[in-house]
Length: 301
Image 1 (cartoon, one colour):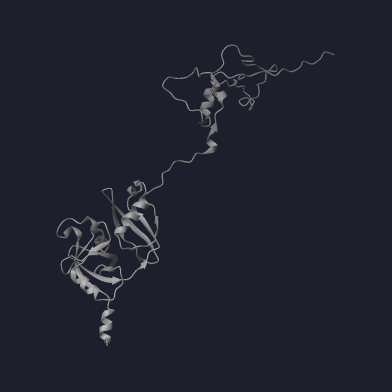
Image 2: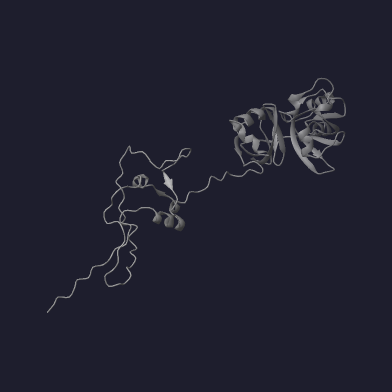
């Protein structure tokens, strides 16, 4: 028969404290696969203890920096570290404010499977990637879990991109091993929408092709000015400008006033200002002169 003490020993979770070191301190060849993922390297004695305990697989752990009260979560990659040491990716050490050789508590946990996560790039250069969602999903294969508030580091095309985990569902810490997770992005830090400028339709108008015709030359009927017979000044007609006769537009006639080295776009123009109106009045306009009003003479009795 199993005693109660033996049964409680089997249910005891794995809780150990180790000296933590960055992956660059790991003896042997450089392990870039560890640095760009979310898994740690633990000593062989940890594997021996874990196999004798009742824990869930895959193995997931909570890392706690008790001095700073910081917590994150991770998986385990290998059990080849020296005794009393764990090797952790540098970006993970920064999240929980650990320095080389600090004590970190490693505790086995069971996390819910992720259904949704939202990330915020820490630099707008991440938007230069052709398919950022596919790149992120591919890099997350090296991770075992995500923790809300962490800044993870992913490597793509020899560049390191940092991503803040803004939200995870169904909890603040989730497992992403063999899961169907929806991914969303927030605008990068410091990103501003480009201002293309809004066109004001009230300030733009279509060009009348007749305005592009060259000014007529030679004799023009009713050109000139006139005076009233009674000596009074002629009233200004506000409709004179609108009643001016324009030369009929004929397709194919070149612009004889063209200036070499210039380009004229005729799709849209700005409204004519007062200064431009005064300048146009100085040039020739058909029926642009003033006239006189003829009053009938009284009949003799």
